[in-house]
Amino acid sequence: MGDKANMARTDAIVLGAGIVGTSVALHLARRGMSVALVDRAGVGEQTSFGNAGIIEANTVFPPSFPSDPAALLRIALKRASEANYELSFLPRIAPWLMAFRAASRRSRLIENAHLIRPLFGSAVSEHETLMAESGATRYLRKTGWLKVYRTESSFAALRRELDLAAGFGLSFETLDTAGARALEPSLNPIFPRAVFWPQAASISNPLGLTRAYAARFGALGGVTLTGDARSLHRAGRRWRVETDEGALDAREVVVALGPWARDLLDPLGLKLPLAVKRGYHRHFKAQGDAALSRPVLDAVPGYVITPMEMGFRITTGVEFAPRDAAPTPVQFARVVPRARELFPLDGRADNKTWLGARPCFPDSRPVIGPAPGLPGLWLAIGHAHWGLTLGPVTGRMLAEMMAGETPFCDPAPYRAERFL
Image 1 (cartoon, one colour):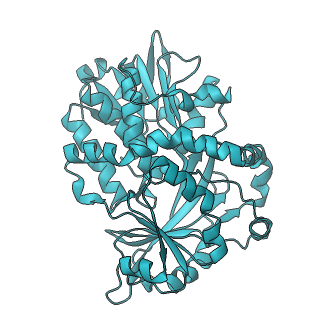
Image 2 (cartoon, rainbow, N blue to C red):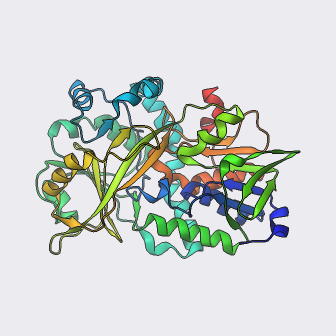
């Protein structure tokens, strides 16, 4: 994995080997830089391991604070499938929730939709570039994303989103039950409306994809090391992190630590409003020859079924609890019966329940760029529900900035200074 001579010539250290950090490291290596990718776990084994596998080129609005009083009441009574919480944690997360609510005002949602569109608009093509280089195109499905709506009212609430999507030039098809089942015949006809988003893509094995990008990074001379990012400190004019192979120095360091970013940044004096939304997934088999060609969102209960190499992955809604608290996967008791109504699931395809934490800023925009007041430190954090989607496009933008190139889009909306 590299020797001390190579380590001594390191131009940049990337802390965090999830899809974002691995993509950043690969983009830097493609520019001829000597790069070390450091993580205390294996490549892609933390937050990036658990997701719905969707590259959301169709995304318009970020998630928003519920405005429906009935939905808020269900959540408050802990009866909602789309959200759960630990009561003792609420005082700690309350300031963030209030900021999240403020960012959910209509004017702010529209503003954020415009600000994040350049990233989502390039998401699929940037993945395709890295997949082609990494021999990973086998994981890509360009079959779009289907969202089904169990009530006419939930579909009617989409009008603002669909109007804005049309303004962005995004393709979509509004479907009735028969139209949706023409795409996915195994779905049960329990919904009156659906929307098909053909520009979205999906991944059959997110862990395999991240590992393929890491292998390509290694083929370009990059080294992957085991180490604890919290050991990062100044060593003269350089930054130093301790690894299992010894101290590693570089003038530039990228923080791509997902939900662990604050463990490093807070002690350095950079305090950003990064919170975590926990989430779970399990894999199931299908009955008989039932199949899906694409991910399906069941919008009212708020879960996704995605066909994966390891089975049909069911993802839950969000959970507000301490990042490192014990798992409380109670949402499956609400989600799985609803999923069985929609699709003929059989028994479990695994015996594990995955738990991860999504790193989220209140405005749902990531921070991509230099760390204020910390020369040589760069940030690629806060990708919320879109780490898989935005990994490669983040890697490209940050590498362009670090190399002194003109970024492919204006980086100003993603600066950390918006919170300072």
